[in-house]
Image: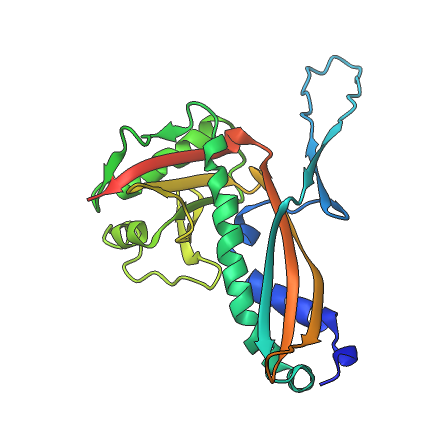
Length: 270
């Protein structure tokens, strides 16, 4: 193997492609409008005022508020490859080597992004860690409807709404006649064709579980801003092995842009 023949962009592209296929964060969060090094920028658009028409028009200046976020979370990956040159030449072997790294990275980042449920606005919660509600097959659907209603009460847009549940909650939903009995879950957690109160159902085991108190997170896509980059992908000949090594650094970050566009239910499961 010649380290000089290693093409980082090939490995980065395949790693990101595998990541995007399975990431919940890629579905439910807002991407940055601009990336500057390890800093990303989101723009929040100001409100437009509607006025009574009396024959003249007054023009409002709509401002955007930039929200800057440092990608301060860092995780590395490092794995061995029998022969980097052969993997690059075969093409599909790159996927085989990057898929596992992408899966682990996806779990880590999804868990981080979903942890921002703690920034939910006061009044947008049902239950808490002290007094959780008890979910069963007879009430889980209605409680999720109530989460969507809380978003509507805050005038959150009806489109691009999601509700993130774990597999146990999905199992309870499957026993409700208003839901499907045999849900199809896509690689990125989206439950195909299933919405509750206008919210696309998404399944993730990275949603918080605090000592047996499970979280269900309802949100609009604009609620959380999230960005990531893969940096410094490189290959080397390992000194103590008949293998090549590939390593890289993933940097990422997230922030809540619209706390009113989050709603959280805390529950135990019967």
